Length: 142
Image 1: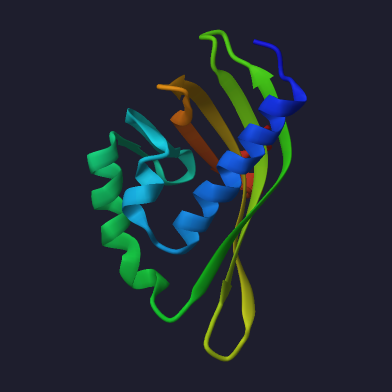
Image 2: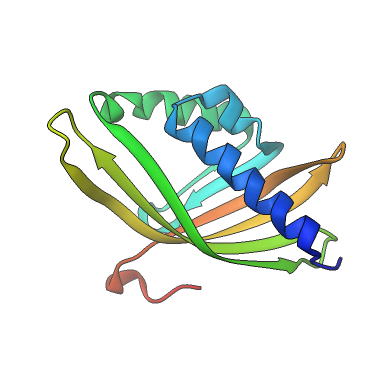
């Protein structure tokens, strides 16, 4: 697969839409951006969630920690490459901020992320996401 300018724009638009539904806490729309058997791994927590249903349950259990905050995910430094399975390997940096009711902005996390994307019925979907928290004790990743 060749990374054309049109494909690059399509991938960037995918992430812009995905992060908006995540920041709006729209769990249904967010999990729909993954394949049915998709997964999200947080190696720093020793956690991997597999399948949309499990993702929805995990995310719903975490909703209380977002009450009274506006969370924003900031992605940059995208590297989009062809993957062996005719999909894409997309790596990028992620910064998550949270703003409270006093207009104070705090950094929540900084990470590097690796996604494996595939096309299903003409739409891009994530098959696998691995989030590497930036912390020297976990080593330098990506």
